[in-house]
Image (cartoon, rainbow, N blue to C red; front, side):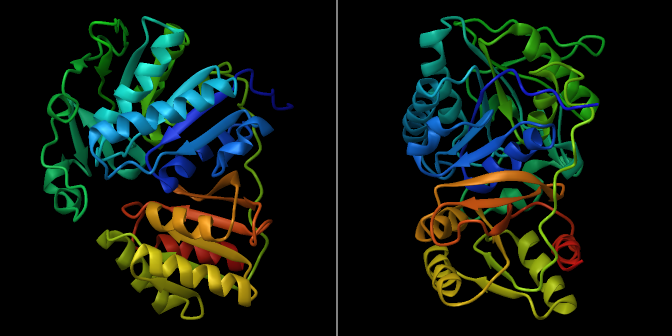
Length: 365
C-alpha cells in the first residue's frame, strides 16, 4: 500500500541537537519528510517536519523561554500547523522556561492554547507513574541523572519540576485534556507505549491549540495520529547508510553511559576513530580531520558538541532518514564541507553498553 503524504506541517523545537534528531526520526520512520534545520534561512525550503534546536537545556528558565519563543515565532512564520516541544526524557535543564516560551507564542494564534507534558520514553527505560519520573523503575534522582555534572535532577515529582502544572491522571485508560488559559500545563502518566498512544489520541482530538511536550517516546505516538491513525501503517523502514569502513566519532557527553559504550567499542572495533574531550576542542579537531581526510560516516554523541561540529563544518541542515537503533537516528548532512555525508547522533545517556558496537556492525555490514 502506498504511503500517504502527511497532511500537516509540524514545527519541532528541542533544547539540544541530539534530542531534536531523536524526536524528528520518529516522524521520518512514519513517512514524514523530517529536516533538522541548523540555519534559519532554510526554514522555508520544505519538509513536513521542520525541527530546530535552541541549545537552551543548561540555561536559566528566563533565557530558555525567550529562545524557545523566538524559535516558535520563526516556525509560525514558516507556516507550521502543529507544535511538538521536545524536552529531555529525564527532565534535565530548563523545561519550564521552554514550555512557557512555546505557550506565549502559540497563544497569539490560539488564546486557549495548553501544553500536555509527558517525558516518558518506555523503550529507553523512562516512565511516568503517579506524576513521578522513573528511570529503569527508580526515581530519576536515584539514577546517574541525579549526579549529572551540568543539569542534575534532584526530584522525580513533575509537579515540582514544572511549577504551576496540573496533574491529569488517566481514567479507565483514557485521557481527557481540559487545559485552559488559567491552567495551561497538564502533566500525564505513561508507563508503556499504549499509554503514550492514548495521550497522543487525546492531544490530536483537542485540536491545534494543544502543544505536545515530551521526549522521542511521545513524538513517535504523535507521528502516528496527527495525519490519521493508519496513514503510515506501511511506511518504509528507510535506507541504511552504505556499508563502510571509515567511521569518525566524537564524544562530548559527560554521561558515563556513553563512555562505557566507547570502551566497549574500542575492544571490538579498535579501527573506529573516536575523539573525546571538551566540546569546542573536539569539534575543531573533527572539522579539521573531515577537511583533510576521507570519512564515510560521522557519529556525534552529545548535543553541544554535535552542534559545534556541524557549525564548524558549515552544515545548514540534516535530512533525517531512519534510526540505526532506538535512540540513534541517522541522516545526511546538507550544506557545508561535509554535504552528502552520512551522520548519526546519540544522546549521552541512551543505549545499552553494546549500542555503538551494534551500530558499527550495521555500518560495516
